[in-house]
Structures are given as C-alpha cells and as structure tokens.
Image 1 (cartoon, helix red, strand yellow):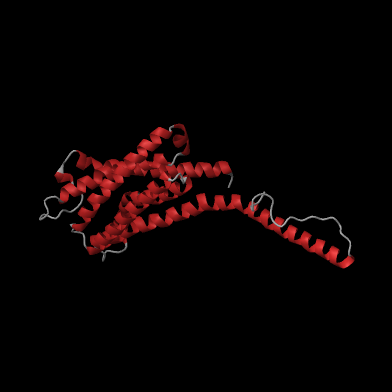
Image 2 (image 1 turned 120 degrees about the vertical axis):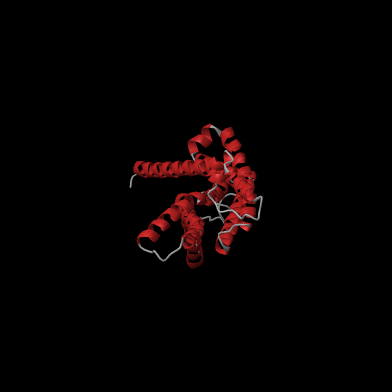
Length: 265
C-alpha cells in the first residue's frame, strides 16, 4: 500500500469516526439540553429524585467531549491553531471530569443490573485515570506520551458510540438468530464490549502508528552503534595481536571508548 493510499484510508476512517461521534453526541445530549424528561432514554430509579439530573449532567458534558475529540487529533489543526487546540483541550478535560462524576452517581442507582454497574465503574475509573495521565504528560512537555494517553482516553469516550452499535447489532441478532436472549442480556454484553473493544483497537493503533515508527527510526542508530563497538573491539584485538606477536608497534591508536562524553559521537 502506497503512502498516498494509506493516507486516504486514514482520512476515511477519521471521517467515519468524526461523523459517528458528532451524530451520537447530538442525539445523546439533545433531550437533556431541552430538559424533556419524557424523552429520557435511560431507565430511572423512581425512588431517587436526582437520578435524572445525574444522567443529564453526565450526558451533556460527555457529549461535548465526544464532539471535540476527533478534531484534537488532526495535526494540521493543532499546528495551525495551537491556542484553539489548548482551549479545546481544557474544555474537553473539564467535560470528562464532570461527566465522570455524574456517571459514578448514575451508575450507582442504575436499574440495569450489577454487571452494568461494574462495567460503568471500570469505564469511569479508566476514563479519569487516562485523562490524568494525559494532563500530567503534557505539563511535562512529553508530547508523544500525551498523544498516547489521549488516544486511550478518547477510546473510552467513544464507548458511547460503540455501545449503541453493539446494542443495535445485538438486538438484530436476537430477533433473527437468538430469540432466547433478553434485552438485558444484549445490553449487558454491549456495555462491556463497548469499552473493552475500544481499548484493544486503541492499543493496536498506538503500536502501529506511534511505537513502531519510533522504533524503526531508532533501530538503525542502535545497529550502527553496535557495529561501531564491534569494529573498535576488532581493532583493539588486532593491535594487541600485532604488538604482542611481532614486537612491532604498528602505530594504531584505539580510544578506550566512543568519542565525546561516553556516548555515541
């Protein structure tokens, strides 16, 4: 695959990701922005008065983070508008923090079952942890590590999209091939798959697009250093052999280490 073809594929995938993120973000937030309780799509615990409020507080900032995320990964936008990138990053961070706090409360009083509660607890904990790591690395100026942690974090943000994809596919399979399954069965499996699958895809992307290219750029330098060290060792051995065997000084001077201050020159 040529470089131009690979670039077109990546832009096509980014467009698909961005379009689905924007679509789900608007779909998820709209009922709560207008405050229409009747259009709430998540079962509520009637004994908890603030359950709806926690879902709304989770849905709105989380949808904003989902909406911002794809554009933060576009290199051209980051380079051309660095200030906008930083401002959007701060808004994204605050949105994730608010969405996570509300998600913990909403999951605690979820009526969908213990399995879903555990899944959302793990997802929220990972969401906050990866955000904290992304913030810590950019404060230290570690741009590559910041990018890695943000990929991981947005993969968790994107779980709101994949949850709906898995749920739709699961219900379609239930109707056509697995009528014995209940809605709860499909929903529980979708809740877990939504972020576990995203994590696996994110790690594959990190290895293929970030770690392997870095390793490929560094490997020739390492090989060259190893060959240089071997060559020096051979020269030292040859010098000693000539000096000891013939009693003749051939005038070969081999430094004890690499030139410079102990590192490759």
